[in-house]
Length: 98
Image (tube, rainbow, N blue to C red; front, side, top):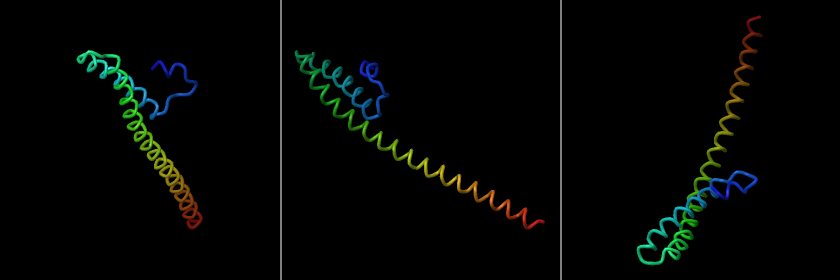
């Protein structure tokens, strides 16, 4: 969240995944590290692992969003073509009815 305040553009899904993964990993690593007596090292290791995992998950989610957007564009194009053809058919029917 702190990073998003300083950015001029919204974070991508990949970047959000990396941020959340880093924060979650650091927190979990600190908890585990404190149990073993080294919270700082645990937080650092957890942050690195969380960054990697969060970025990978965010990347997969971003790819899926991009695929969904491409399918939606195709559907919109096809719907526009269907509507055009329906108008054309209606016009032909009116011409035949004369």
